[in-house]
Image 1 (tube, rainbow, N blue to C red):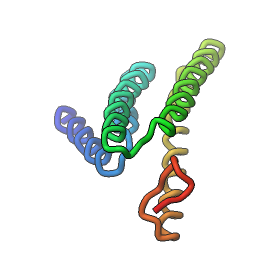
Image 2 (spheres, helix red, strand yellow):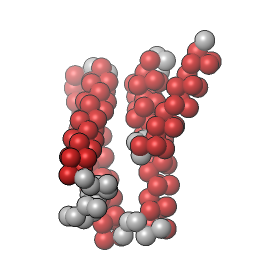
Image 3 (tube, rainbow, N blue to C red):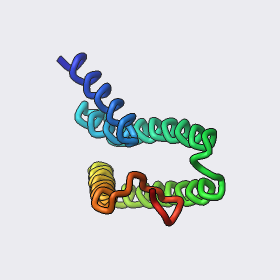
Image 4 (tube, one colour):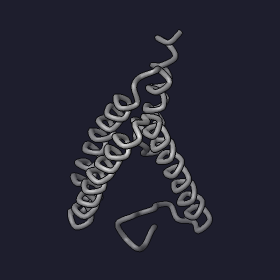
Length: 141
């Protein structure tokens, strides 16, 4: 049963990742936790998937001129520093409290927050008739 179910879920995750621009790692991480994979391993595997997906998307955006270095470099720097900071804070909290369940709560919170923000942005764009939402410019099409 698991040999059919889990690959089917991963295939659906890949379809959603391609259609909606979400990271497949975000969908696969809860699946890995359901498969009783250690939270640290699930997070690391998911982050690796997201890293390669984001890297490929960034290269294609740069190639087609949809992303300029003026916008990309600041986002990269903020993302890189936030990752290092978040990793260090989480490591400190986990070592002090010795509760691995905090990883699950952090992942659930991030997924919930991103779902909420994507929904708000989509509803606002739909209500105003905009077809494109851009973080890199003050005007949207």
